[in-house]
Image 1 (spheres, one colour):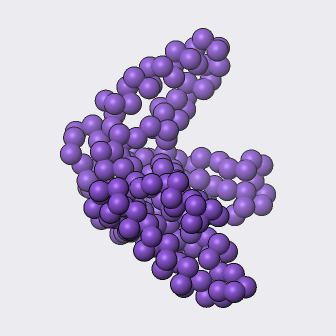
Image 2 (cartoon, rainbow, N blue to C red):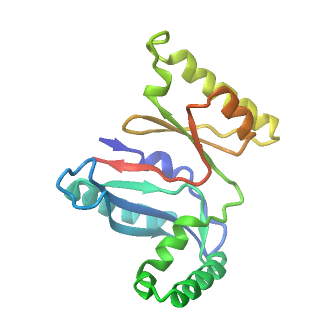
Length: 204
């Protein structure tokens, strides 16, 4: 069981009445072999305040336990007003392609794609298989080197370093601020770095 609800709560801030965070509860075939699709969206949830977060978390955990599903949280903040133009363009595109059933999930799709967080956050996706090798069986040195270098690259980019460690099923997500991605990939070509992917909030 993975429960990152307290760690993620500490990252939330709301500066505007239209700010929100987006989380999804997803049921995956990997966890449920009888599922007909690779993935099914159980629920899309919008967090408008810390009170909203605290109120919804028990429901999220309960639903994940019942459905054997995972809750994924996008750590970059969204904004209803700033999503408006993207939403309008998406609706027009859908209407003109005559794929009007897609209108049902239009806002969820747009909310997943576009963030407006002034304090952008990236995710370094550490799978233990990437850091545990035949010549480095515990992976500790390489892991600590990744943390050190990602911190140094944030300093180099003139940003106050952020390093929040979010446990996952297969490793860890390191939440950072942006840095020189090319330099990072030159050193760690097998480690993925995502600019707006979700992290794991809860997994039974």
